[in-house]
Structure formats: structure tokens, C-alpha cells
Length: 349
Image (cartoon, rainbow, N blue to C red; front, side, top):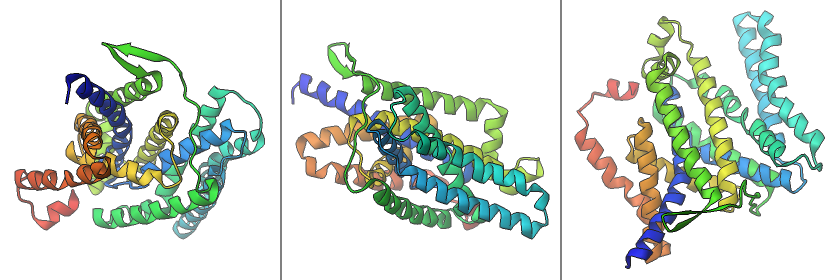
């Protein structure tokens, strides 16, 4: 292998790794706050990309039907909970938050379907459609079992992936789509040619990683959110509401998923089920980084991108095999390096 070829493969690995960085950061964010390994995160990325492509094609994005169904279910769950607790005076506020507010972007998309509203408005409308999906899923599927072990939360997360993926097939069909890029610029960096869209993905990845690291390690609000995952009972005792923390975390993750889909979609064609493999590779990067470290998630995802790029050069049929196989020695090494914990401590973590 020549030096020039190695640089080209490294360049491709950086571009691919930047895609995984955005998804890995979302996975780490939700795990740090809620202890949930959110498998459907990649599906939300696919929804964002497919929704933007539909808006650009003058079509009605099927995402509005998912949002409508989830909003109705969340409102029913919230109303039932308030009824059991004897707090019906809070019902109007609950309906406004869980039903009316999520349905606003869906109604807006329905009213603007088929109209040319401009690229910027299409991007904002896509973000508005994706943003409520995470909190709605949290209210319906995770908040009732928030104190369950991590394994139970993971099982529910996997079930949600298959459900959301099936709905995506109904909403968008089996064909893939690729929205228009946000920029067509081409940048020459030290003799290497980078598409402007790839640089946007890389810049967004680094900015998101730094912002999340600073927020969770330097701000009081970020530390409070982190405390809900470490000790939910202790968090309640000091005035932190784990339910609110979960909603905030899923809102942030929804924003990150929406941005990821908008940035990633123009560089790779996504299908209704593309999110699973995308999320799984990002999860490998997050595991390599420790699953609780923002810099680790960034470096781990970039490593996965490099590994996939160089493996595909030698044999493209084995690129997924190698990426997923590297997870085994990483887990073994982390297990050997970690101090022994009893079952109760492991369950709390």
C-alpha cells in the first residue's frame, strides 16, 4: 500500500467515522442520564433523512403519522396516570405538553405539503418533526419502567427498534432516498479533497462532543442530569426529578438525531431499516470509548470509521465482520481492567 493510498483511505475513514460520532454521542447522552441503551437512535436518524428527502420532493413525510400516534398514546398514558393519582387539575397542562405541542409540527407539515418553502424551512420543519419522537417514546415505553434493570430497558429498546422500523416501511416504503446536500463546496485540505458536506458532518461531530462534555462536566444542570442515572432515589431526595431529566435527555437526543439525519442523508442513501446498522456501528465506537465518556465516544467512533475504511479496501465483504468482531476483545479487556463488583452494584450501574 502506497502512502497516497493510505491517506485516501484515512480521509474516507475520517468522513465515515464522523457519521458514527454523531450517533455515538446520542447513545452516550441517553445512557448517561437514563441508563437506556437506545437502540432506535439510528432509526430516528433515518426518519430525519427520509423526511427531509420527502419534503424536498414535494411529498408529505410519513413521520407525521408516527408523531400523531405517539402523541395520542402519550396523552392517554399521562391522563391515566393523573386519574390514578387524583390530579385531574393538571390534565389540561399535560394534554398541551404531550398532545397539542407534538402535533403542531405534524399539522404544519400537513398544511405545507407540496409547497416550495425553501431549503432552510424544510430543514427546520424536519427537526421539528423529529424532536418530539424521543420524549414521546420515553413517556410511553420507558418512564413506567424507569427503575428497571439495564437489561430490561435494553430489551424494551430492541422491541421499539423493530416497531419503529416497521412503521418506517409503511411510511416511506422500501426504496431509499437521499436529500440534497446543504453545500456543494469542495475543500482542499493539505492536498486532500473533502466534500463540504463531509466537513459539515465532522465539524458538527466535534462541536457536539465538546458541547456535551462541557455541559455534563462543568454545569450544575448537567451534573444533576447525570445524577439521575447514578442514583435515582438520591436524585429525588435532593430535588431532582428523574422523569423531567429523562424528557430533557430525549429532547436533546432527538435534536442530535435530527441534525445527524440532515447531515448524513446527503452523503449516503438511507432506507427505512438503515438505522439499525448505523446505530450498531456507532454503539461499537461508544463501547470502545467506555460508553460514559464523550471524548472516548468521539475517538472510538473515528476508530471504527478507520477500521471500516481499511478493511473495505482489502475485502469489502468483511468490513462489518471486522468492526463487530473488534468489540469482543475490547469487552474482555475492559472486564479484566475493571474492579470486581457484586451483583447489586452492577445492577445499580
